Length: 132
Length: 147
Image 1 (tube, rainbow over the protein chains, first blue to last red):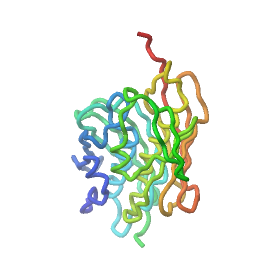
Image 2: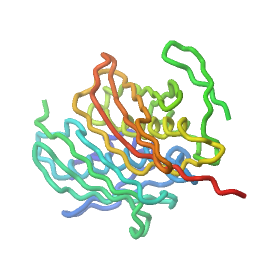
Image 3: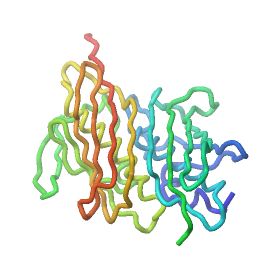
Image 4: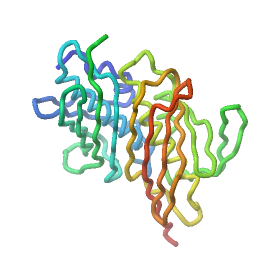
C-alpha cells in the first residue's frame, strides 16, 4: 500500500475515518460517530457523509492497487442505496475492487462495527491515468 | 419552523423547513466540508461548495455530500409537514463528467412526487457555469402517525 494513502484526504480526519485492515481482497475503513458526521434522520450518520465516506474508501482501495506513476484523476460515477439508518458508534466500510484499468470500479458496503448489518451499498467508478 | 436563507444576490428569504425531530442539524457537516446553503424554495434547493483545488484528487468528495444535502432539502420543501414525515434518502447516483473549476453550485429540483416518494434531479456547475455533474435520487416520505 502506498504511504499516506488515507492521509491525502483531509476530510478523513475531520470525519473520524481510519484504516482498519487491508488485504488482497478488500480494504476496511472505520468511521467513528462524532459531532460532525451525525445529521441524518433518527440521529443517524448523515447520508451525504456516508456517500463521501464510501467515495474515500473506493479511492483508498484503488490507491492500494494502483501502478507506480499513476493516480486517480477523478470520480466519474457514484451510486448509493441506503438500506438502514446508520446509528452504530462505528461505521465500517468494506471496499472491493471489481475492475482496475483506466477506469476502476469499486463496490463498497457500509456496515455496523461487527460487520453484520449493512447500512448502505455503493458503487464508485473512477478514472485513472498517468501522473502529469 | 422558519429558516432564513441568503440567495445568490444576498436577498434574504424565509422558508418553511423540516422540524428538528425530522432530521438532525447538518450545520457542522456543512462547515467541515466547506458547504454553504444558498436558498430553498418550493421543490428546489441550492448549495455552494468551496473550491478545493489544493486537494486535486478529492474535489468531488464534498460535492458528493452536498448532492445529498440539496436533495434532502429540496424534498423537505415538497412535503406537507402537518401530515407527512421525512424518512431518509432511499438512493441516489451522481455522474461527474468534467473537471470543475473553482467553486461548485449544487442545485436540486423535485421532478416527481408520489404518496411515499419524491424524485429529485440534481445538477452541479462550476465557476464558469459549466455543468460538470448530474444526479438523480429518491427520498422516502411517510404518513405521520395519528396520536
